[in-house]
Amino acid sequence: MSTRQELIDAIRSELVKLTDEENSICKVAAQRGIFCKGFSQYNDRELRDKFDWIVRKRPNLSRGQLEQIANDWQLAEQQVHERPIACDVQTEIHDVCNGWDSFSTPQLEKLYFELSGAKMVVA
Image (tube, rainbow, N blue to C red; front, side, top):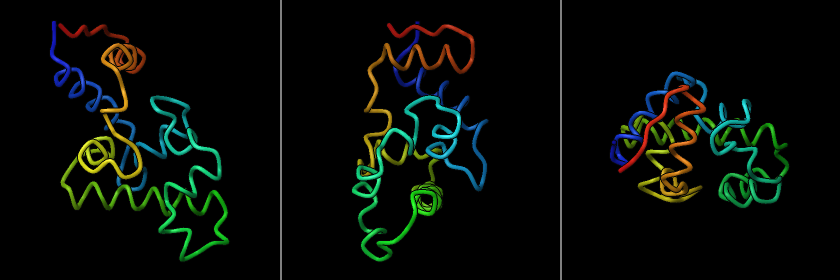
């Protein structure tokens, strides 16, 4: 049996393997259709609303351009907050999503299994 935090730590370890200095988990999740689905979980209007501060300055951005700027912003936030992935940052600041708080423990258990092929149960 594990704690919820141990499960999150294990999922983070799997997700970090999918990211790099140019690709946030939000971008990777959208491209691969995994986890929360990243940027693709939002329709165009919702995405523009989530990043309204970017859109206000550049209203004619295409979705692709907005996603790239949002990806870069997520990566910068990770550096500023000294966190390995955007989920950790969003759990603290809740400005684009709620990070780990967006998921129930059963959802996280399922995700871990999908990512790793191993089962982890929270007590």
